[in-house]
Amino acid sequence: MPIVRTPSPAQSEPLPQPRIRKRPLPPKVVPAAPDKPDYEVGYGKPPKNTQFRPSQSGNPRGRPKLAKGVDTIVREQMLQAITVHTANGPKRMTRAEALIVKAVEMAAKGNFRALNTLLDRYGRAVPDAPIAVTDENVVDLNAVDQATLALLRREIALERDAGGEQ
Image (cartoon, rainbow, N blue to C red):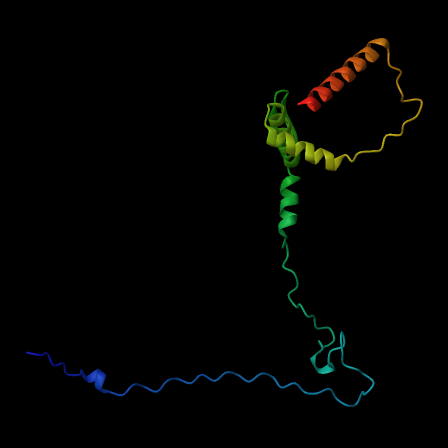
């Protein structure tokens, strides 16, 4: 036997009318008064009626007190002095200095990533200065140095000749 459902009293009533929301109309822009025809509206010259009134700021609240950017926060944290326990005892230094000291220690222990980073930073911090060759900084080679250079030249020549024959 099919089931027949009868509508409940709440369903038989018509739905209420939807609520209509009225938005406020935007303020009307009054065209500039023709009393000053010499004022030309253009770039950097807004219409007089849209300009701020005298003694009214475009940013009335201004920047909040103690508002800091991310760069300022990072700079303050990196320049903050801390105590570092070294082999020679505790020492006060900035966090930036402590990081560099730690990187130097890691590079000295054989960490190649720390070594590459330090050499890169050092290269940017200390630019190469051109070396002027003068008579004062030219060193005369003694007999041992000349013999070592002669042996090195012979070995290089032998390797070059051996590589060319293959």
